[in-house]
Length: 506
Ligand SMILES: NC(=O)c1ccc[n+]([C@@H]2O[C@H](COP(=O)([O-])OP(=O)(O)OC[C@H]3O[C@@H](n4cnc5c(N)ncnc54)[C@H](O)[C@@H]3O)[C@@H](O)[C@H]2O)c1
Image 1 (cartoon, rainbow, N blue to C red):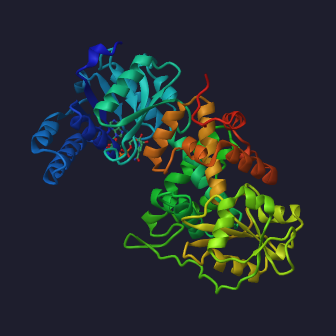
Image 2 (cartoon, rainbow, N blue to C red):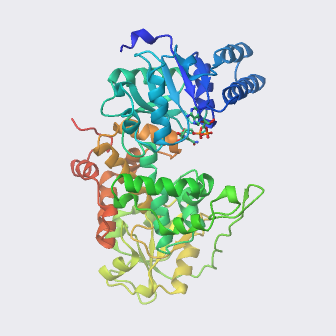
Image 3 (cartoon, helix red, strand yellow):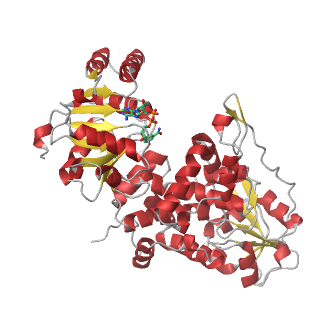
């Protein structure tokens, strides 16, 4: 099989539901001839008409010239029988997510198409290798994994199994580029890149909820306003629906032989059993009315009551931004070596909880409050230990909110909310790199495009610094004793060498 032979591609799309239609649209817009086939009689014609009306709509909105819309529509044709896909140089299947159905379809297609024809699967959760194993020529089979809605999610994972020929991957990359999508290469592993990297965000948020650290709406607020995620993890779970997310979380966990980093949450399983699926049932973590999310109230800022604020000298030096902020907020600083009798003891934990910090420095726990020193702008997080008095908690809240920056007050957690969630995302991203599933650049590219995170996991780690992320994970691992927090060797080595997490192995 060679690349030169296929400058004129004809793409067959089998399964013309949500995904098949999207793939057909971008292929036809990219100048590729498309033949649609669906097992449901009339299904392919319906899909063709729907895609044509999308082109007309795009033309009416001025997003496509009418000539281009007409030319794209003319590239779509319909096959009534599978045998009519004979002329295809590539067939992409987007049928039901069942191994037997996809395997049988490829087996049948092999009897129809030429030896050079690529067979590509849009599966999200099945093994590309297992599908290829049903074929006489597994070398021509690859994954071509798009995201929904296909025309807007401009990334596609090109997945190679152990037997997939390199030329097949190269041709799919060329086709993806013609479709106006960004291709990323991945090896055939559970979740590929994006669904694998996406495990950290919601599983760690569910873990925080499971530890009663904060209500779901507060966790969402901290991650949206403080850490810059477009959507909170519980808003995301409600959007996707627990009927989709929970099986996906369980599948990845099992497929990686119960890897603790992906351990699902009993909270999500219970809520799924209760039918609290999310937006689609009007009730998930939030309630919805006519598609609108309920308003959730944020805790009121208490009246300001000033106590001298004592900050350990070492922590103050390590976090000059905190000392500056306190001055700006008009705090009266207690500069003593030890805190005065009434001083508020502010600690700045990295990967630790307040209890551990108070005990280590022999501070009065009733007057000790933690502030997350890494996220001070969009939303500040304060953390109490089990003995912190309400008076000192409220004083810290009022002081930190006095310039109108939102403040969240949470229960004790090794690594607050944002440190924990970000360190988890970075660690999983590092391990994807360590396993050689994709290049560091492709990991970050696919995650920003596929999940809409502000940065890819490796760049996110670089922004905090590899050494700081390693310190957060080491502390969390030490405190919880849970192997889910063990740092990836990729992260450890780059932190020790003090280089970017995007640095590949030589
Ligand atoms: N929906 C998503 O967000 C998403 C994202 C990425 C990948 N995927 C994958 O894409 C595939 C399709 O998903 P979808 O959401 O478009 O499903 P869908 O139900 O909207 O469409 C599936 C289509 O396949 C047809 N079909 C079923 N069996 C067939 C067969 N043997 N031969 C021909 N046609 C057949 C059905 O009639 C239907 O039109 C699945 O493998 C899914 O995992 C879906």
